Length: 109
Image 1: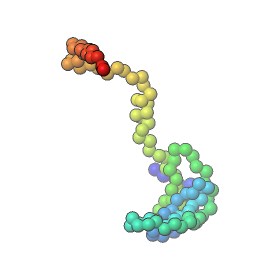
Image 2: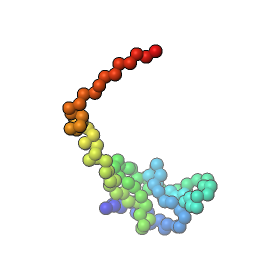
Image 3: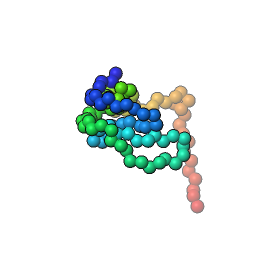
Image 4: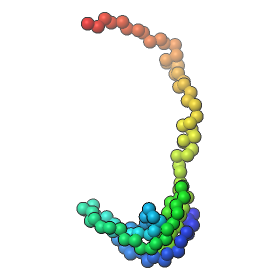
């Protein structure tokens, strides 16, 4: 569930990508479509908001044109704790339990 941080009331236009830049302001840039050469264009600052970001949250411009944040899903956190556990030796199968490997001694020339 997302929570609104700042009300900007931006009206979004088709063909533009709206995002929060590194200063915490709302910017937009032309979307790349069709797989052709991307046109170089400077991003345009739409609204000066100055949002301070927190770790673990995703910041975006919602459908109302306001800045919102949502907690990021971290699916790897369960697996990370399993990786930190001490590793056990793999179990030997019954086929390899009784047999010893034969040593080969060959003289190399």
